[in-house]
Amino acid sequence: MSLPSAPRINPSILSADFVNMQADLARIATADFVHVDVMDNHFVPNLTFGPQMVERIQATSPVPLDVHLMISDPDRWAPGYAELGAASVTFHLEAAAEPVTLARRLRDIGSRAGIAIKPGTSGDSLYEILDEFDQILVMTVEPGFGGQGFMTQAMPKLSALVAEARRRGSSVWFQVDGGISDDTIAQAAEAGADTFVAGSAVYGAVNIEAAISGLRERARAASLEA
Ligand code: DX5
Ligand code: ZN
Image 1: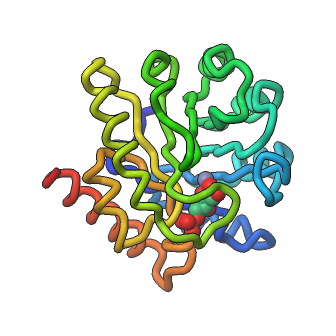
Image 2 (image 1 turned 60 degrees about the vertical axis):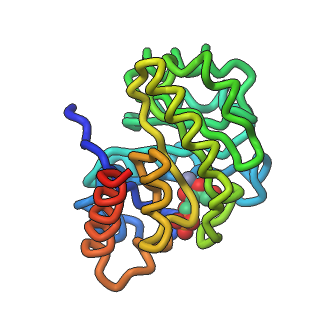
Image 3 (image 1 turned 60 degrees about the horizontal axis):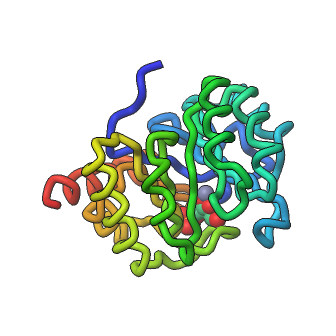
């Protein structure tokens, strides 16, 4: 499978209509991936769905799956999402017992391996294990809910991680998630993000295709300037 090039726009179906999922997936056919937020009411104070639903999304989606696991004990549960065919599986550093072992397992199954950090978590411990991952997700809200405000204060951490990764010759992708909109995407692109999750900014738009291409153009312009 050839991978979409940057900037990538991944709409989050947390903001879709859960009882019209098939139609809401069809509406994002021009996106790069569909961002699938799995929440367990334990790692975060919200509950979405598990593997049975994600398997149906995998069977129905016009674009590959970018699964974001906001769950405890990803060491146990994450491989199942790779096995059902998700192109990318991201778990949280704060929740994983053995992140490197888990990342290797995800790659062995055939998925991209991603690691996410919450706004209060330092990125420093990722430097030594960068090569084990295909994507680093720097959260720009506290995970759990869509529609929150973008945390500008996460940008220095993102820039530092990007600089260190490039210094080490890594081509890992940098994803941001939370509060991404026409007003905030440029800041994240300037800080080095290449992959952008957007929930309410896409599903809240009257014209979804125009919202996706508008975000992509803003990110492209900002990263060229950076
Ligand atoms: C929040 C989720 C996000 C959420 C983003 O915990 O991880 O993916 O859907 O929604 P917006 O783009 O509305 O902030
Ligand atoms: Zn997410």
